[in-house]
Amino acid sequence: DTGVSQDPRHKITKRGQNVTFRCDPISEHNRLYWYRQTLGQGPEFLTYFQNEAQLEKSRLLSDRFSAERPKGSFSTLEIQRTEQGDSAMYLCASSPARITEAFFGQGTRLTVV
Amino acid sequence: GQQVMQIPQYQHVQEGEDFTTYCNSSTTLSNIQWYKQRPGGHPVFLIQLVKSGEVKKQKRLTFQFGEAKKNSSLHITATQTTDVGTYFCAALLSGGSYIPTFGRGTSLIVHP
Image (cartoon, rainbow over all chains, first blue to last red; front, side, top):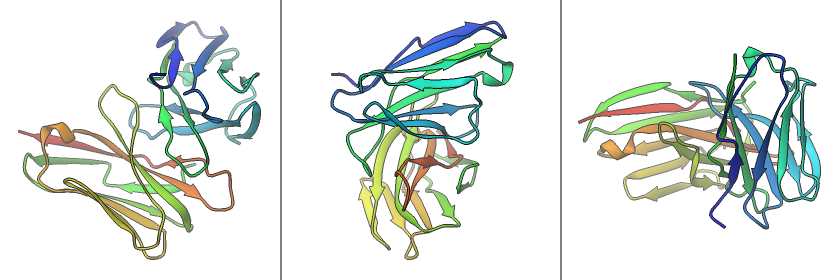
């Protein structure tokens, strides 16, 4: 296992389209996080899973965003009816337990045109 | 919004000079983590501080956690061009799910 894997690495979509991103965490990591990062900012928390349970979701997260982790392994993040403001790097991270380091994937860069 | 403030936002140094970035929170933190993100890369974990007043060193990097567990600093001695990147602190708040909450980061630019 070489680390957290994200797919695709880049996505260009037209405004109003739906997009889905995938994250494969490090195996046996039961904690999985999605973050969003824009230029000049730190990663902004979106949502968190422990195994298959989505335990926290940012209050700032629009209803257009949804995430799943159906079998407690890989996760998907879907954005419906994309807007230009959704353009960002979407980062996935995993960790084996609480209060431990998070391992980040390379991210998916979304551009909404 | 983010609950940790980091300063400065940018820092230009000549190679060989020292560098320090500061992280401050209005609330008591359980732990604090530091990450480095190279240009075009993803955040990579550097260290975690847990105890009040804790000091940890990694070669030229020194990390401190304040006595009140509300602030932290990262100091780099004699910067090198390989130190270029953005350094983030990430707070883990007690009483919650211990989700790393990131500061805005300090971008370090090292001039040769």
